[in-house]
Length: 401
Image (cartoon, rainbow, N blue to C red; front, top):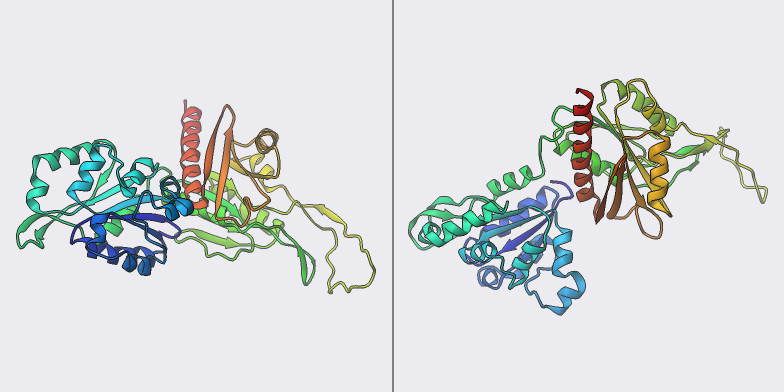
């Protein structure tokens, strides 16, 4: 669950004490957790408890001016990858079922474009009540996921269905939300990060790429069921779990590794920021400071993306374009000239793109395009992989008819 942003809603009920353990377990798995509490929830566990566990301020009021100025309900909903409400009281479920937005948490749920998981917790008679049963049918009919409840002893001393699921069971369901079989059995090769081209033993030519977008793409492809190989230049981030990782340094090394993998690749995604040029002559010793000016002669590096697209056994090929101006125009030229199946373009410079946590993409293909609004690179990567899967399967289907 590395880098996932989970918004946890806590409503009124004694089961709210379990939510503190849920925050701890989510954090252990590498998720960022933002807690939003209803007034009923605050009556059982203090916001300070969740703030200490999550490391983030807890939001409680829809019209809190400090909250709105820092991160309003729309921004909160855009921030999250998934919303989990645990416990979800009968009252909260009723309000969601009827589209009410009378506090921060219900407003967030209505404003979000990410999956919503409700984890009910209430007295067994409330759970069995016809009104609750009808409300549950309503929310499920809208695509909202409900988890549980479990059966057992309740705080009121009675026994029956209505217990909130245990945090370990909720964690499993949360992790499953980020997995699919969209690309099951598909072999995907991703390149990421910068390359370094030596000038002498201590100096090199490179760029500002952190590799985060490419690593996020590799992770999203793995979650979609693909067998993923990641070839990456020098970066300061750990490779995703369950992804075959091949570190390289230069463009020539990256080219060699890419073509070593090409025969068994179904989809190639070139997210690396490969240096366009390298030093024509690499000094064997450190170049000493002397003259006021020296001339560095450069020669072109291999265009790995164009070489893959033009190869005999050509995979479905996706390029990236980092541009400082007229992003879509430059991307369309690259899409056409390099004969790509798809290109994902973004603006860089002035704090955009490189080394930033968020990004926005223009995804283009022959005859189509879609804009992905600014969000975390991890969320963008999952959306991009969904588009890649759709286009790949459509092309594969057309080729078999």
